[in-house]
Length: 184
Image 1 (tube, one colour):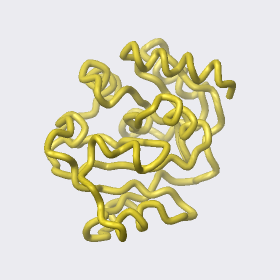
Image 2 (tube, rainbow, N blue to C red):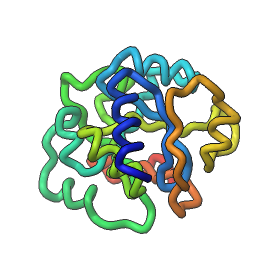
Image 3 (tube, rainbow, N blue to C red):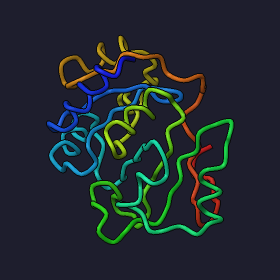
Image 4 (tube, helix red, strand yellow):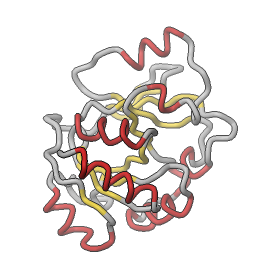
């Protein structure tokens, strides 16, 4: 994907846009995590209750520092260790982390993007993106820009047209403190 198109996507995000973009296994819906109006719009499109919380997808662990408490060296090593399958980590949220991201939890779900387009987008954007699967609840995962366009039509401001990664399932979800597996 050309840098010019990624700059256009970043401009869309800065204007409060809701986008769809490829991740490691499926298309995700995303927006600026600090823009309350954009997050509410994303939640409305997805019909997802805010109480469930959201995932943040970033280019690296440092991008999450405004939202999470500092982690010990062993927790950082655990999160950044190479893995065959992406892992979304539940980590302690800062007290001032937006409630629309954490939901009713004191933990925040974060994942370092392994998808090259998603990672470049977050790096260029300069911070993480909200990330939730692009499919309607109960319907199959969306794996192409065409499927996203068919399901959501004009409700989205931008659809990043690039292939999803080679993963067959969404990321595993683990608690960084207890190592409990929430979703396998």
